[in-house]
Length: 283
Image (cartoon, rainbow, N blue to C red; front, top):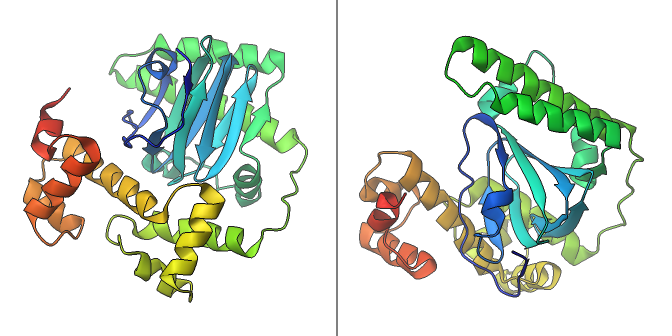
């Protein structure tokens, strides 16, 4: 099912195991227009057919057959549009998984990925990636041997993709305008403080500008009001806590710095159409 988004829908957390491969194709058709995800680790997307158009933070990208993309930790991933014949596999590596690797982070490669997160995969490498993904699903048991095999397969997939990025031409970013630079700095702050700070004035003060100027810059660069970004990420933080912890609604409200539990419930209902307790009970 192809979607063509014209408005922002409510965000949701990307719920995956600590390290896994998920065939996302079957889920794409059921996503609302502009579905927002946020994850603490690294996300890899492998497109074997069709195309998917998406945003990372506020920048728009598109990958098609034989292309892949990487989303670095704590970046906002928004699916905008998908083709009817899309075949997409999503891999995720949690922060714990990444920290357990015996190699040091390649910061030069990380900077390249941040500038150009999409890359073409040669057909022979794409064939190998597809085979490795198939093998991964053949070991979906909880035995220690199966877990170690899946770990090795994930690392093999990651190394193939990393090699493609290393061999690709270096992207040269155009100089940023003042508003683009402020928006980039705002997102850096937002991804650090969104779970506890929802006031525009906080971010404006950090950037030594007025709230009005910051709001105008973000709206012009992203096409989306600044306050909506704050609300969306607060909802993501709330949904994650509701679904993945046993915290009470009062405790979640306190963690997210709402003045009262009732104000948190009103906020959540306003932006999701349901209450926190009903959302927790949903499958």
